[in-house]
Image (cartoon, rainbow, N blue to C red; front, side, top):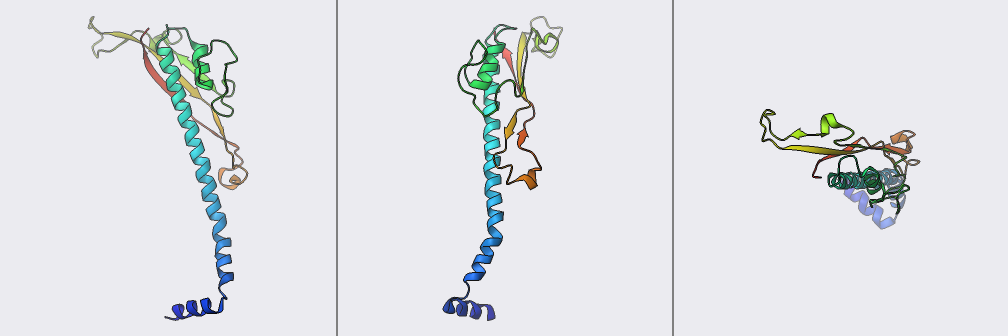
Length: 177
């Protein structure tokens, strides 16, 4: 009851303005931090999605090529979005710092990883002669460092990191050629 009486008295006299400013001063840094952290996290997720889609596209491209060919085109498809046969790749990079020199792109197929990617049986019984054999192709992108745009503001939370390093992103497909 007393609180209700104080509020109405505060509104009538107009003396509550300072309390609102103090509350805003206490909450504003927290709200700003949450906003910037949300933006940073959403940008990192969007970059991760771009890399996953490009790794999938590169694996799909290599699945249509003969084993041992198309490595340069796949790397350009991964970083620039188009399969260029010459280095440097044509077009602009899909992400900042997303060049083949800043992270590693590995291709495993029937030529350079014959033990795991050549003549794989699709049947559980390897003695069956009618089982289909297939070649596989795997594209892996690892070590990409996504720049943190608000690293200075978030330095107490993320340490002194200025980039977020993604783990290996890999896709394996059946080679049809």
